Amino acid sequence: MATVHTFDTVHTFDTDAFTYQPPGSAVDAQRILLKPNLGYPVGPPVTISMGVLKTVLLSLRQASPRAEILIVEGVCSAVSLADIAELNGLNALLRELDDAGIQLLDADTLPLKEYPNRAPNPVRFKAMWAPELVQTVDCRISLGTLKQTTLKDQPLISASLKNLYGLFPRSKYRARGPNSRGQLHVPSVPQVLQDVYGCLGYLFDGGIVDADQRYYSHNWKPDRKRGAIAFGQIFSGDDLLAVDREACRRAELPMPSYLGAIETLRDSF
Image (cartoon, rainbow, N blue to C red; front, side, top):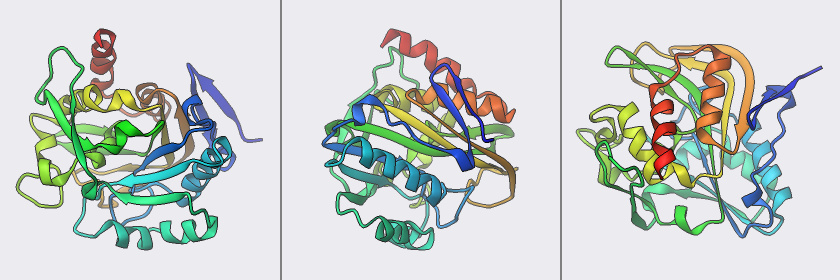
């Protein structure tokens, strides 16, 4: 029999037994923002699986029958979001669900606002630009994948918090290349993630990590399928940091230093 475990509000499911309990803010909500990891024209484990996404969408619809469910993503590729949605099977899934209340929105095209950093000592950004929509919805959920890449000879873990990078406009944060957000890598991703949480992450009501396969790469590129390890687990909960911590613990990955740093920081919010 498939197992379900709970660790401090983090739920761990075998993939074939995954069910999703949305946060309380999703119940009878008018607008729900779902930020999935779909920024590359490559399937799992680089991006989330359509099976997991379908389960989440159906659960959100059950929690709020009349809500607008806004799937918001900003790509990290020369390939457009519209093309990625077709290549990765999202368009087929939306046709199957046949739900006019579910929309796909490109984060790079949305009106922006500056979100002030609530951390007392920002690493780099005292405020960060992101879609105004993030502040106007009733519920926000991050659906990431579990990935380990290597940046500056150090392991970099991506899960539900790092997934939020796709919400920041490339027009504001690109560096040498037009398709990435190079400014969010300086001085380092683990440090900038502290600012990401202080500006935007704290607003999120729930996180999900698709770890059916665990991605790893010996370089920094998270879209080159260097390796995948079957893991067969999905994690969910109301706290992005707790979800990411439990996913790393269970997968025996290096525990990201940024999790502890942010947990300490948010005590002063």
